Image (cartoon, rainbow, N blue to C red):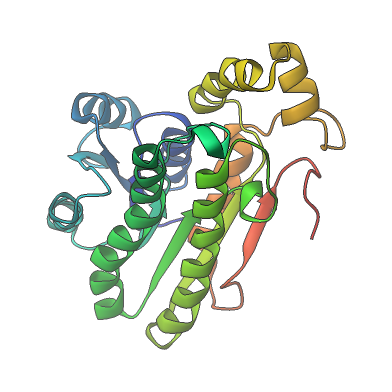
Length: 258
C-alpha cells in the first residue's frame, strides 16, 4: 500500500498510536500533519519523522472548534489539501459510575466524540471539493464490548461507530470513505496508566489486571502492538474504492470476533 503524497491530519499524533501511524504513513509516501495538544511534542515528532517536506506540527485541542478549523486549514496551506483524517486523540478515565465525576464524563465525550465530529467537519470541506478522501476513526474493542469502570469511554467509543457509519453514507456521493479501527489493548502510555488505576478500583494486583482484565479474552494473551494498528490504518487510507466503507476493523488478538 502506497500513499503517493496524500496528506493526513492525525490527531493525538505526537505520541502513542498517533505517532506510530504518522511514521507508517510517511514510510508509505504520505505527508502528515501532527495535530496535538502539546505543540512542542508535535514539533519534535514532525522533525523526527522527516521535517517540513513530509511532516508539519499544529497545535490542536480537538474539543475546540476554532483550534480544529485553524489546524486543518494550516495543514491544507502547507501541503495543498487534506486527503485523510485519522481521528485518534483520546484519553481514559476509570471509575465506578457512582463515583464518576460528571466533569470527567464530559471531558471524555468532548475529546472522543466532539473531537471526531469537529475534525470531520473541518476536513470534509477539502475532501468534498476534490471528490475523494478517507475518514479513519479510532474506536476500540469497547466500541463493541463493555468493561467495568469505563462507562464514559465505552459510551464514547460506541458513539464513534455511529458517526463513522453516518459519514460513510453522507460521504459516498463525494467519494469519501469512513471506517473505524477497533483495537484491543495496545501497549501505550495511555494503557500503562490504566493498570494501577484499575488495580486500585478493582482491589486486585496489577498483574491480575493485565492477565485477567486486559488480556484474558484474547486468544494468545498478547497486547496488540502500535505497528499492528498502523498497518490497518495504512490499508484504510490507501484503499482504492468505496467497497470498504462504514466498517469497523477489529484488531484485538481475537478478544472480540464479529
